[in-house]
Image 1: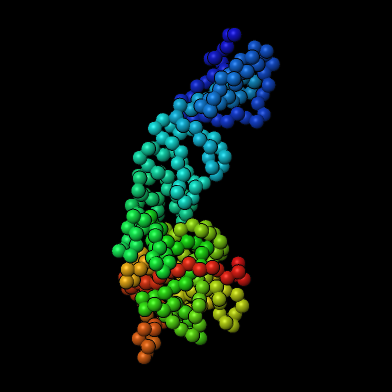
Image 2: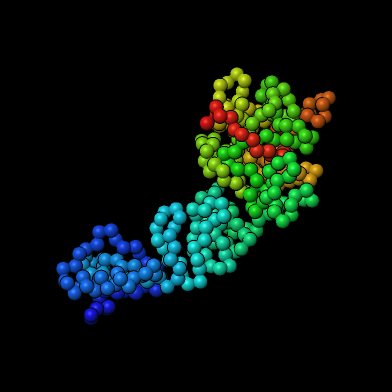
Length: 319
């Protein structure tokens, strides 16, 4: 059988396209025979596609690298020689063609990713080396290991807390972050057992649910119990000079943090990510109880307040 290869096959050294669902049908019997021959000898490395000129011809495009199917879109693609398709360790539906000495890293904050050198993560628009926070109380071989009291620990470029999850917060004195009757947040207090949900924004607490917060990520805290006089949950709000619960999302404080340790236990030292004052301190001690203190914004951005986060179940009544 004589096949006009010049007419039917256009070998492309990089990439291929999948066969079109509705391909034009050739009228020439010899052309049909040639197409059948090509289809029989095609493989995952070669795909037949109709010629774009509408004349009923066909061409083949070859992948000389590695063929892959994208886990998110289902589209078939081709990685060049020397690269393979790799996905993010957490966001497993995100990926790209990376060389053997790179891994793909996806940043949930910016919703973008990139191939980064091994042991680095894509954060804030660039590939960065992760910050490993360990101590003698944490398994050094696995910085994600929780402490005996199950306080979350930062690891691999993440803070340990996750968007959409709920936590209690405990300070250096072992007191939970609570509220006084007026709604001001303090260590210990009149209204205890508070449950805080880490949210990407005030618009939707389910956004990026279950995704770890990166070390340079930001979040807001939803107070699930809410104010006693206002139905529904509230927000951890920055209302100078104090931090108080408020049902209006406009006043919600936007936080960031750096990994910290309290007596060998993992914690996060909180600061403000927006506003005129970025530090967090105690604007007024609760005399004569020196271990209690209200929270408020501080002019000095070095000021931060360390809390140990312990994951708990969110309230079923709060959506």
